Length: 259
Image (tube, rainbow, N blue to C red):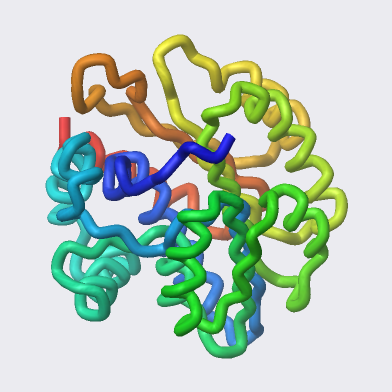
């Protein structure tokens, strides 16, 4: 399905969880001089204008990053990426995960971004030309399997589908098992929404069976408007980097301050 556009949801609390964790992981991995690969399966447009009608209409950024940013100290990698994005793209700009990756990487690192939606891909290609990233208008899971194991072999993959298609929940454990089989040293970060009805439950059971040593992190928050089904956000991390569990515990404490 090619109807999803993240501009309506950019900067929401799910983004805060996902992007804060991603920025921290990249900061940790780039402390070593060894180059790394970053692969993203559902990249979106890369940069979002929170003053756009679509973003204002939903109110998700106003209930998200507008409230949560103050909880991160100035030296936190996520806070730094926010400030760098505004300096480069304007005061209302918000970084998608591709830009967080680009800002948090080095010239020796390799970035691959997949986005199938024509409009989102056009936006992404236009901005990513300055990042040195490889941008692919291709199904993200097909690209992930084609690229793994990547060169450099050290690195991480962000798997962030829209979950508009219910079949995603059933297919993701199989996709992650296939990717891990080819790239057993890669850090795999899966984001998933926590919706009323618990559609993510069977998927997580399958993932935890396949990856018993993985790290799972969830945060809860109230729906931002009547009829909105999202009531939380989750991350499932295969091969979690050292220290990530402690960082996610700090992130949970920040979310508690928003309650």
